[in-house]
Every structure is written in structure tokens, then in C-alpha cells.
Length: 392
Ligand SMILES: Cc1cc2nc3c(=O)[nH]c(=O)nc-3n(C[C@H](O)[C@H](O)[C@H](O)COP(=O)(O)OP(=O)(O)OC[C@H]3O[C@@H](n4cnc5c(N)ncnc54)[C@H](O)[C@@H]3O)c2cc1C
View 1: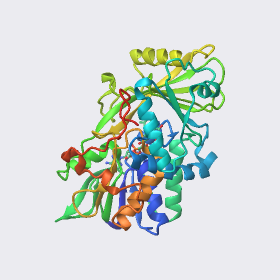
View 2 (view 1 turned 135 degrees about the horizontal axis):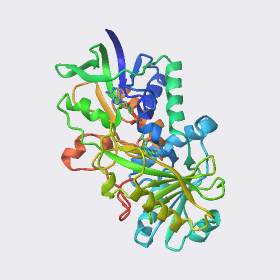
View 3 (view 1 turned 180 degrees about the vertical axis):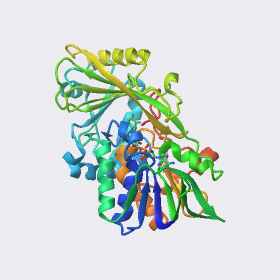
């Protein structure tokens, strides 16, 4: 039996960023427990897109706070600062303008982009049905696994320990306090603070304490497309007209993700048991959307597909908050946002553990409480996009 000040369950981006943030602030007695290997969950499937374009101001602020670290790490995390663009149809032009105004009020470098400027930036793009566009010139994409491993390295350098292939079976409590965790196999690891950063699987550990964390596994399909010529660095595109997102791979190929979240085929799955390739119908649908948006590709073909699973609460936003017995913190439910905000999430959890509240006025801890689901007070964008899912 060992006694630890902090045990973190889950060695993905979020658990490792929390370990990094705590150790950077002098808490060296930190143990990360990961059931498989580091970054083997949602993190390993991430498209790694870097943007602050969110309708929920606190999420946008966290993305903006996180950007300087990703910029500083640069090649260490494969960051390509290609810029990030978002394109909308007429029905969403007002929402786009309102969101950009909110972003600017938060200090985020985002601006509207004339459609002909977009066409000049992205010469192979069909902009006929694009009513308005915006750009974050400091956006782009990076490698989520590399960022997770970087966080793990920093935490270990500062004294944290990481145990891989160590599944946690349950959280232990005594009276109203958390006392540690029990591993599968029976070993008890004592702790003053237990942080659940186990994505979708966090709900199972909470259920053992009678706490309901409503989270679903949403399967997301991706295609890698060869355009017929290698594509050079071009801005990431969030296409809210056709409901897809696209970025260039280092190989010059094109990565396309589905952002039609109403698609019944992909909801809802067991993240331990799902098909890891796109369905035939999916491939056909996504390929059609690519051909519509990028008719300038000289000889497009699909090279392969894969799928990942988002951990999705009812409002598609995370819980980052103390829950249940004293000493227990939940940090999960990041859907498709977790990579770009992971540095700020670690900082927020360190604030909660060490200061008892957020120290960032633009990131109120209240936004991320678990009780919002039972209260029906969901964390929603004040300027939602019509028909464009919940990811913005
Ligand atoms: C297909 C896809 C594309 C995405 N694209 C983007 C993007 O472009 N930009 C962006 O910002 N975000 C994106 N995301 C979201 C982002 O990648 C995730 O939000 C983030 O990686 C989640 O990190 P996590 O640490 O919470 O979860 P995970 O990476 O899932 O980590 C949780 C860990 O907990 C471990 N675990 C589970 N149960 C236990 C247990 N009982 N004991 C011990 N360990 C346990 C798991 O093995 C896992 O390693 C994407 C996600 C997916 C799936």
C-alpha cells in the first residue's frame, strides 16, 4: 500500500496535462494510473486542430490561453501554423459575426474574411455556397499524442510517477472523504485527492459511488484523401455548410472529419467495442462532400479511413469540478475539444485543487460543474450555428 497526495486516473492528454500543471506548481507527489499505455484513448485518434472558435466564451478563452504553449513547442508537437478558417452559409452569417465579436472581446485574434480572400487563400475550394468566413491566423494543427507525451515528460521530470497497464477498479471513500483507489487485482493506492481524467470511462468509476455522469460515446469517422497532387500548407477549414472539417497532412494528403453530429449511424457506441473504419455509406457521403467543396483536386481518391470516439455529455462540454466525496475531482467529457484546450484545463484543475477556484476570470469554474445537467442549466453557446452540431 502506498500513500499519495494526488492520484490521477487516465494517462491521456487531460490526465497528463493535470499532472504537468500540478507538478509545475510544486505538488510533486502525483501518481498517474493508466489502464493501457499513455495516449491510447481518444488522444491517439485526435485530429489535433488548434483554434479558439467556440461559441461558449470560457471554452474559447481556454483555447486561446493554450495556444502560446503549442506555439512555443512548435516542432516538438508537430505544430503547423497554417491558419484556421470557418465557413458558413447565409443562415449562420449572423451567428458567425456575433461569435467573432465575442472572440475579439476576449482578446482572441480572429477576424471576418471576405469570401474572395478565402478563395484566393484556398484556390481549389468551391465558395459558391459560402456566405461568410472567418480566420484565425495563429490556428492550425498539431499532434495530440506528442503533446500528451510532452506533458507526461514534464510531470515526470518534476517528480510525478506514471504507472501504465494499471487499470483502476474503483474509487475508495471513508465517510464523506476520498481515501484512494483500488486497482484491478486488489492493490490499494491511498490518496488525499483523486482526479478522474479517464474520459468516457470516468462514468463507470463514478457509478460505483452512486454518482451519475451522463456521457455517451459518439463515434466519429475520418477519411484520408489523396487529392492527386500533394497539397502544401493550407488553412484548416471548418465547413459549417457541408458539415465537415479538413486539414492537410504532412504527407500532402488531406484529412477530412465528419461534423454532422445528427448522423444516427455514429451515435452512440461503446468505446471499448466499435468499428475503427468508416462505413461504406459514410465514405460515399464524405467523399461527395469533399468533391463538392474542393472540385479543384485534380484526381481525388480515398486512401484509408478510421474512426475515433468522443466522450460526449448532454451539452458537448466537459465537467471540470469537484464531485461527490471531498477530495474527488472529475475532468472528462471533452468531446472534440480536449486537445486544443488541454494546457488550460490542466491549469484550471491545479487552480481547483490548490486554490479552490479558478484564477482566470474568463474561465469561471461554475461553467464546468456536474450539477448543470440535473439542473437543466446546460453550457451552451449564446450564438449557436443552425444545423451545425454542438462542436462550436
Ligand atoms: C476522432 C477524434 C478527433 C478529435 N479531434 C480533435 C481536434 O481536432 N482538436 C481538439 O481539440 N480535440 C480533438 N479531439 C478531442 C481530443 O482528442 C480529446 O478531447 C482528448 O484527447 C481527450 O483526452 P482525455 O485525456 O480526456 O481522454 P483519453 O485520451 O481518452 O484518455 C483517457 C484515458 O483513461 C484511461 N482509462 C480509462 N479507464 C481507466 C481506468 N479504469 N483505469 C486507468 N485508466 C483508465 C484510458 O485508457 C485513456 O488512456 C478529437 C477526438 C477524437 C476521438
